[in-house]
Structures are given as structure tokens and as C-alpha cells.
Image (cartoon, rainbow, N blue to C red; front, side):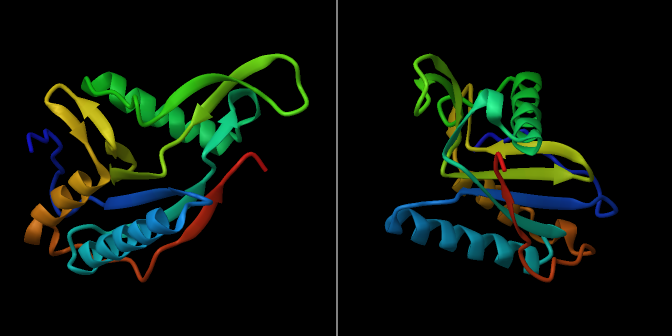
Length: 169
């Protein structure tokens, strides 16, 4: 793995936010649960300060997206653009019909699972993404966090995941 993501010293707050789709088929839901457990284990070892788990929809009309979803997507897109990475094909904008309407509009399509890593309030990585050497998955992000070992031993883990939702409501 040729990750160029580095974090500062232990005085900084390193946190992970795991985004998952609201509705998932059973095999995918099982995998997501395993990723959540693995991420919590990384936090308990002290590699990161906190873990948040948020849900989001599978797709949503861009014009109707909630401010929180638009902000998250904009933040991820800016990170990708400034680091020479791409969110495509994991995130996409597609022209689709909306039920009850005759005109097509742009829809934001979100991945089933996404991991965002922050240092203080600065986004440092989004998984999955595409970089010059290939695709990087959520599992790659977890492996990166696990490789940090004791480098964050002074940072205490969170008491547990914070479930919140991102939607158009």
C-alpha cells in the first residue's frame, strides 16, 4: 500500500467517521457490522481517539439533498481534488428520473460503506477512493489505522459509536 496519509503528534485528535447505507442486503450488512467492530477495536487500542457511525441513503436528488449530506460530499470531493485522488466510481452523480416527474435530474449515488479519517477538524483521508496506483477500499483504511500501532497511545478511545443519520429530512 503506498498511502501518503500521515498524522501529526499524539496531541492531535485523530478520529474516524464510518458512513453506511440505511438499507443493506444481509451479506453486506454482516460485512458492515464486522467493519464497525474492527474500527471500534482499533479505537480501543488507542490508535484513534473516537469513532462515529452515521447512516446515509443510497442515492438522493442533488437539489433535494440535506445540507449535511451536501457538506459531507463537498468536503470529500475537495479532499480528492486537492490530493490527486478520485471518488469515482464509488461516489457518482447520475441523471435519473424522479418518481412522479417527467424531467430527469442529477442524483448523488453514495457507496454502501465509506470511512473518513480526520486529524483535529481536517479531513485526511476518504475510503474508498482511487489513486494513481489503484483503488483503496475501506479495508485499506482500516489496515492503515491498525498500522499506526502505539503512535497514538496517549489518545483515549471513544466510549462507543455514535449513531446518527444523514438524510434529506
